[in-house]
Amino acid sequence: MSDTASAQGRPLVHFMPARNWMNDPNGLVHADGVYHLFFQHNPSGEAWGNMSWGHATSPDLVTWTERPVAIEQGVAADGTPIEGIFSGSAVVDVDDTAGFRTSPDGPAPLVAIYTSAHTPEHPTLPGIQAQSLAYSLDGGVTWLRHAGNPVLDRGSADFRDPKVFRYDGPAGSYWVMVAVEALDKKVVLYRSDNLRDWTYLSEFGPANATGGIWECPDLFELAVDGDPATTRWVLVINLNPGGVAGGSAGQYFVGEFDGVTFRSESTVPADPGLEPGSRAELERYDWLDWGSDYYAAVSFFGTGGLDHRVMVGWLNNWEYAHALAVGPILRSRMALPRRVELVTTPTGPRLRQSVVPELAGRLATDAAVRRDGATLDGVTPLDVAATAAHISVTLAPGTASTCGLRLLGDDEHGTLVGYDARTGRVFVDRSAGRDPGVGDAFLSRDEAPLPATATDGPVHLDVYIDGGSVEVFAADGLRTITQLQFPPSGAGRIDGFATDGVAELVSLTVTPII
Image 1 (tube, rainbow, N blue to C red):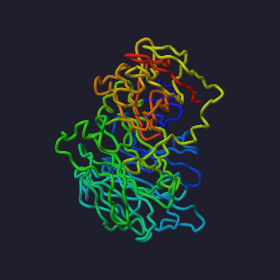
Image 2 (cartoon, helix red, strand yellow):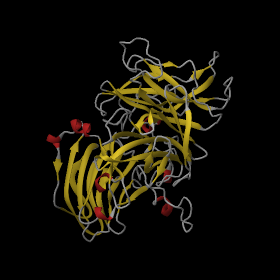
Image 3 (tube, rainbow, N blue to C red):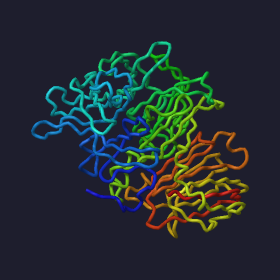
Image 4 (cartoon, rainbow, N blue to C red):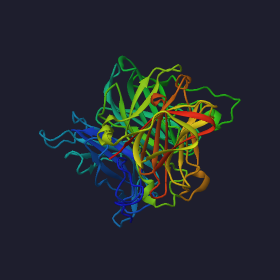
């Protein structure tokens, strides 16, 4: 068991458990002023296994306190594991529709809806994945399993990851569950009045990226351009593998939901001239993130309204998560919480993402460093260093093919964040960084095509680095790239660079995270 209180690379504002394995965020819920983050967790080991729900809370989405394990794996009387607690969601049952409240004066029950992954040793449901409930009557401190579990069983070995929300529209008012038949690459929808009894509604898929199993869906309504009179629904589907950067990733669809059926407006017809799963095919789709390390992203219940949602993803990739040789705990962190909105684009409403504004309270603006108007020619020292910071940079490519910043650097290593003027793409390149033991699978260059409007003139990037991660927001948040990094101890130099010509660093502000 590894304690990472002083581990190299431990982030300041990204949630990371004190020890042991973590993957998908689960049960994201905001209740009574507290943000609850549950997560797939192995309480007793550094590798995936013994799946339970870990738990952390925050008043502001950036300062997290880890709590005791909320829902532990199920075991038989002899200690044999018979039920893994897989991914799911949580809701505030204000009207006590499930009937769990025991006192009329008590707080509204928190109800977790999760996948019971029954092992082959389970006495009645061997190998079956079904949906179950647990509830808390003390604000999330303690949790009880519902005696009637599971509440939804399709007799499937791959039916999982329920995301539940309250629908209130023309079709009525009721709970909706969005889950997946993972191998079939289908989203299945159910409804309930009481969270216990579920009726089938419809299904969606396969569509767009289908190179891997579908997991961790989400469905929510957003105003377009902040106008509550014009809304669309967003369906998020995470898949593994088959992502645009290789391995696991998250895609999304924009469309309509009438309380029964989701109809996509952004499904792309197949092109017989493109090889299935090729980069050219995958770039036709809409991705939550174009980097290697953003997976299982889902949004909070109870945050925002139609104007925005708050979303969290796991900052890693199943392609190499188990193989990282730099210390297992360092692979277990969440990305920064993001505010997601719908904005008009030439291809229809699409997601715009930004780091939640609460992070501003952790930025040391009085210690910010500026470097404006610098000429970039080759590698250009800027006399700036940081390992945890918000970096705001504006670049004018000039005659250069590529230009940008070299981050988390020393004399040998560094991660390039920049713009390729030849292709109109923003990129994050860790191929010259430290190899954490998995070679080419990790030492990648991830890129995203910018909308044409974002390349008319200087290119602006917002970059967040924190204890070995890089998150880039470009084109006003229409494109993001997230990568896990393993820089050598003390590597924090920030240099400029330009290739095949001269570029201008129009402006640079580096604001430390504290």
